[in-house]
Image (cartoon, rainbow, N blue to C red; front, side, top):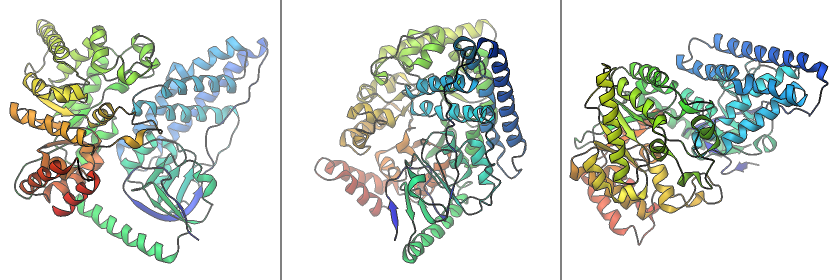
Length: 581
């Protein structure tokens, strides 16, 4: 009898896999509270240092034995965990706890890990919040040696064609198992922006994360179908169902192969309209992926990772070196660097000395508000971005603008910094474009004013939707209300596009809508001509662009918008997509 676990988790890539279940018994290693005498403290601190060094050697061994066929940028994930082993929060913090509380190394590490996980849990940004997974993974590596655990290496079994079931996977596990030929994996924990999920996308592994209790309900050795497009796992399917999904899998593989043929093709619609397809990036591994799909540029480079898990903000030279490496890695395509977009959370407080967290950080001191309140935090980044513009085409993008006075203040500050650099004889692009993210309803409604004062606009749909509909998109209790097709959202998007066109300024979109195949025809019909998305979504977007007739879509979208208040938006979108393809 087939067991369908519908809505079981979050699909990482739109793909299907069929294979036998294989349980990987991992998960967070818990420690028991144990206290020690004063005479034992030095021995305990030495034991902890030995465990950290052993964990470091384990990760180096994985990195050094990554097969040559693996993309070279993948080792960056292992390097991230190696860097965390150097960080005082994990490498030195437990030593202080051992000395102060006279407790075991295991307990001191767990206390420090718990505190760090809580910090990340309280962050507003979902990408940064999922960095707690890395803390847990690294702490587990140390705990394994403290508790003398002898886990069997993930790559030691014959995993070819298997579907891995686990509570969670480390980047090391994921890399090793990919090279063992696994068909897919399903984890109980993790989110769409965890390192495990990012690796799955980069490596092309069908995966579902956040599938609570999956390891309890799915049995070792039983045949599974993983439908990552819908976040669904089917157990013990009958022959009819197997045949259905085998045909879908074959069609999917043929479709994926056909997309590769589009890499060198122009992004032009069937009726001759040129469309710009750019990539969103944040981590080093995204640079190679961006080049692999021939992106026209980077429409959003997130810089928040530079500020995380540290006691002081990065200085100008740290910013500059990071940006220079990215610019050089992109080989001349333009990059849009978004200035700091962090919220009022404990990590920012520790790094940037901001006030304690607001009751609702999404509405508090974040993004450009924080930067203007703390110009000494903002100026080093502005100086570095301007200096980086000497190495290649760079644009500056300001997040979360809500009024023109904010923008005037930002532009005045940029001009001051330009004057400083000029007096110091430092090279920069004096005509560097300055744009703004339109992600607050007030900014969308005043888009015509912003378009007159900016060089370009970029619609951030993720925040625009949650602010317009007054819902937290990451709150399980209300995120069912998160609706990109709400009439108010579509009208705001259309208003921003029209404002940019009237002012002769380019308008792009860098939110999740831009890379969703369902919405691309709608956005083309609205007049959007620049899209920025995850690199893995770009070729599918190009396929849709090349098969679209913009003239016909424009007329269809006019009809859709006229009917949007009276009819089901989902049905109208379905009719639009059916009628134009």
